[in-house]
Image (cartoon, rainbow, N blue to C red; front, side, top):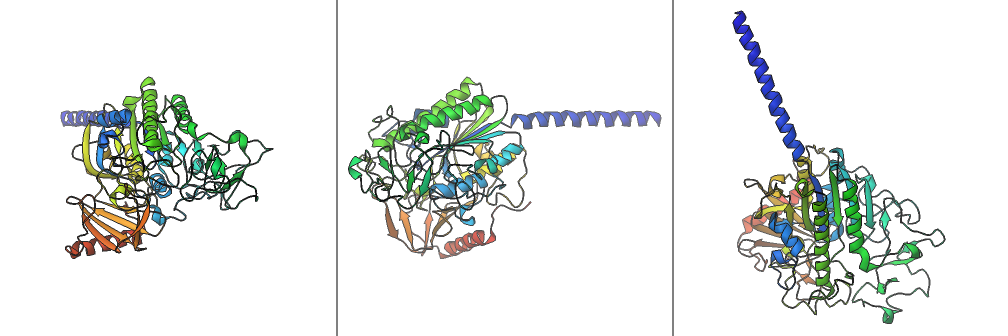
Length: 523
């Protein structure tokens, strides 16, 4: 009996030892799966704008290299076809049509994401990451009355999980042309206060209407208020002259700030959201990139963005961080040619297909509006491949939470799915089984993709549809359209009359997703 007890005790100890060993191995593996995360978001970039996605009119060697070493997705999406709602959904993991004031933000917009909201940054912050956003923000700043441009600009990124930020506060075709560092406009002279508004401050205030002959880039529609750097913008501002930047220098500033952040935090995990303004209007690349393509400043801005990616990757290599860093490249929406300025994007387009094989672009729920370049890379972890799995920028919250061992509260990130396996190129992993696409704001047009089926719902009975060969225009369409993307990726043939049962099922599914207030299951 004593011998049996001794053996039993030894067996228990052996079992405990084995469990401890397995736990240690699992813990080490989990630790190894907590890489730095760098999310690079382009602005207004289409599926066909990169040479690794079929472009022949220009070359993007740095992005091609990133794709060749990682996963190049053919069904990678943003959730909306305009900038503010996509950025909102990327950070919050919730469809923007569920939120307030989530359409394209005006210059004096208050903060759109409420302080304390769970975001990608707050999730990774809990996991011990240093967090930063550098570049275009366009999600509002300040309290209900809007930004205090001469005081503390909060709430903002630092109130939703970011440790630091260096921002273009709105988008560069809107005023003001100043940076925001954490809570302040840097280099602001108190003797020259900054004022921003939507009404002309004085009768003699120069604008793109009154001083059109002085512009170095003419406007085509809408962008004809305050002039800065020879370019007129949406909205008005005065003062803050010492704080103003030059458009041509934006990309260099973003790179320098980002590299400094990575250097400062190279010994701890970090999350960098590199939010580029390229290739949004006004397209004014640095002089060294001007004329680098035959596509005008739009093409030159793509080359400039590719350079930015190259500089970030060089910094990671120099810091020996490439095998410790997950890089995600995406865009906030599809392409647009003439978006308010006469920069010859249309005239020099040639045979370049910015949206690739797809119809539509920015402002549209056709595939060209939300299906964009989407690349993930992690040297030594992700095996090079092309994936047809459906993934979306809105899924970064749940996927990075899974990567870092964090649990999402049930009342947060309401539409973010864990597609980490697909993002990492795991062979048996699957992406989304459905995706809602929207154009802008809380009402308008929706798309629902389920498998190869795509339903469009146009509540306004029109779709602002950018076909790359034509000017931006509003095209009347039926309220509902149905397409089979496997047979018709360009969405040219509406088959709703041939498949009414499929259309009815998808209509009900879309309405349920909207009405339920969430699509991520409660734990």
